[in-house]
Amino acid sequence: MIRRHPLAEQAADELLRRIGAGEWPVGQKLPGETTLAAQLGVGRSTVREAVRELAGRRVLESRQGAGVFVVGTQPVEDWDRVLRRAAITDVLEGRLAIETEAARLAAARRTATDLRALKRTLAERSRAAAESPDDEYVEADLAFHRAVITAAHNLVLAELFDSFVPRIRRAMLDMLKLDAAHARHRGDQAEHAAIVDAIRAQDPELAAGRSRSHLAGVRDDLPG
Amino acid sequence: MIRRHPLAEQAADELLRRIGAGEWPVGQKLPGETTLAAQLGVGRSTVREAVRELAGRRVLESRQGAGVFVVGTQPVEDWDRVLRRAAITDVLEGRLAIETEAARLAAARRTATDLRALKRTLAERSRAAAESPDDEYVEADLAFHRAVITAAHNLVLAELFDSFVPRIRRAMLDMLKLDAAHARHRGDQAEHAAIVDAIRAQDPELAAGRSRSHLAGVRDDLPG
DNA sequence: GCTCCTCAGCTTGTCTGAGGAGCTGCCGCC
DNA sequence: GGCGGCAGCTCCTCAGACAAGCTGAGGAGC
Image (cartoon, rainbow over all chains, first blue to last red; front, side, top):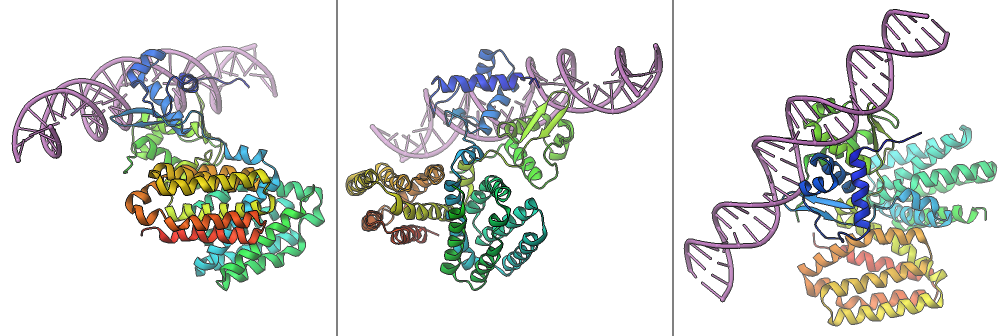
C-alpha cells in the first residue's frame, strides 16, 4: 500500500521539521504566507492548508491580521496511545478517579430523566450478562457506566471517560476471553444496582463509596 | 479574551459534529468538495481547509481522485481545546477527581524521596505565597500539587494532571488578578501542609479527604 | 510630556475560476 | 468471462481578487 504525499502534506512536514529544529521557538511568528510560499516553492493556498493541518495538531495557531504563531513544538499527544501503553492498573485507577467523582456528583445532580436512563441501562446490562455474547455484554456494561457519567452533568468528566472507553473495552474483552466465568463477575449486578440506589437516594458519599469499591474490586481481580 | 472563529474552523466543527452523529460512519466517503461547500454555505477552499484540519486530527483522510473518507470518529484528544471551552467549575471537578485519587494512592505508595519532594515544594510554596509575584506563586503551587501526583506513582493520573495544568494556570492567574487578597487564599498553606501530613502518615482516607475538601473549597470560592 | 485617534501597510480569511493528476465504473471488444 | 480503454467523477494546486483584522507610526488634543 503505497501512499501519495500531496504538496500540502509535505509542506506541513517541512514546517514541523523546522519548528522541531528550533528555527521558530514557541510563541514566535512565522514569516507571512506569501513569503513561506516562495520559500517552499508552492502556492499560497497550499501553505494555508499546511498551516491548517498543523493547527489541527495544535502546533500552529493563526490569527487574522497578526500572523501564524508557534504554540507547541510537537503534535498533541495521542491519548489512545498513551492509554494503550500504560499499565492496565494505572488506567483502571484513572477510571476509578473519574467514576467515583462522577457518582458523587450524579447523586447530587441527577434528574428524573437521568434516573430513568440509569434504570434502563442497568436492566439491559442484567439481560446481557445472562444471555448475550461477550461483546454485547461489554457494550451494555459500558453504556451503564456512561449513564452514571451523564448524570453527573460535567462535560470534562464525560470527555475523560469517553477517552478511556476504547482501552477499557479492550481490557474487558481480553479478561472475558481469559477466564469467562470468573471475569464476568456474574455476582456484580448487585453492586451496580447498589450504585443506582445510592444515586436515586441522592446520597453522594454512598454513591461514591460504592462506585469506588466496585472498581477497586475489578482492579484487584486483575490477573498478575 | 474573546476568540474569533474563522469559517474554516466552524466548518471543521460542523463536519466533526455530523461525523459524531453518525451521518458518515467510519470508512464512509464524504460528499465532494463542491457539494459540501454548497451544503455548508462556504467556498471550496474553506471546505478544503476544514478537511485538512480534521486530517491533522486523524479524523478524515483524503485520497486524490477517490474522495474524502472518515478514518475515526473522535479526534486525537485535543485536551487543551476541550478544557479551554469547558466551564471552569467542570475543569475543577475533573482536577478534584484526579488529585483526590492521587492523594489516596500517594499515601499508600509514597517513598522517602517523594516525601522529601513534598516537603521541599511545600516550603517553596509557602515562601512564594509570602513574597513572590503572582506568576511565581502560581508555579510554586502547581509544583506542589505535581509532587503529590508524582508520589501516587501512576502515569495515567500524571498525564491527566499535566494536561490540566495550562488551563489551571490561566484560571489561577485570572483569579489573582480579580481579587488578589482573597484569591490567594493566604490561609490555605495550612490545608496544603495537612495533605502532606496525611501522606507522611500513610493514611489514604485522610489524604483523600483533605485533598477533596481543599479543592472543593477552591471551587466554591469561584466568582459567579 | 502624555494620552488618544487615525490611518497606512501589513497580515490572514475567503471566494472563484482554471487546469492537472488520479481513481472508478461502465462499455465494448476479444 | 476477461480485458482494455475511456468518460466522468474526485481531489490537488495555483493565481488573482477582495474582505477583515492587527500593529505601529505619527498627529491632534490636553
